Amino acid sequence: MFSSSRRTGAPPPSAAADRPVSSPGARPVLRQISGAPSRLVQRPAPAPGRRGGAVPAARTLVVYYSHSGSTPKLAEIVARLSGGDLAALKPASPYPGEGAGLDEALDEEERLGALPWLAPAYPGPGGYWVVLAGSPVWRSGLAGPVRSWLPKFDFGGSVLALFLTHGGRGGGRCLSDLASHARGAAVEPVILHVRSDGAGGLPGLDDAGVLSWLRGIKDPGTGRPCYPGL
Image (cartoon, rainbow, N blue to C red):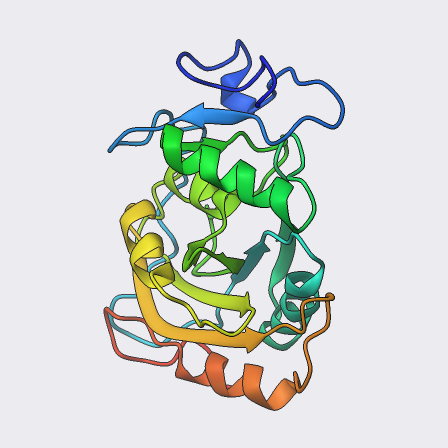
């Protein structure tokens, strides 16, 4: 069962910073969610003007969550090739390792309709033209920490694209998760899928595949490539 610090109602006193009180080793502290986001911790200024005129050099945020260690390897390549700022999302209390413990934690998230509180100091999209979000595929969707992060912000028209690591079943409903949780984002439907070997490795990963994906990301408002110099 979950520890007594898990959320089933009101947020903890420091909810704006996602600082729940939890015991060491507890499963991720959950916050109850409904159809609408429970809180906004930041409302960034709209991204710099890009409707019409020349396409600016993309200022990029690469943000990701990793459980097994595969996703950071991909995120580092994405950040290097895009010139983006790299940031990791961490739940306030880690998930159990692979196996029955993780399955039980995900079962409980689904039963409660809840998502984990995030550790403080997570990034926001304010000032970025492009946000590249990375996640493992969990039960055909985005991992809980990514779904918890997305609704905290109004993306102000920033272009939002997705890169995924998975065990062989592809992206499932990840794109619909992205679109439904990210308010104000211009969601780019081109997704980068990379298969993991289950032990933190990404066989066959190279720069060429990531570059091809980045070249395909366009501003939906103008149809222009976000990375014309690649």
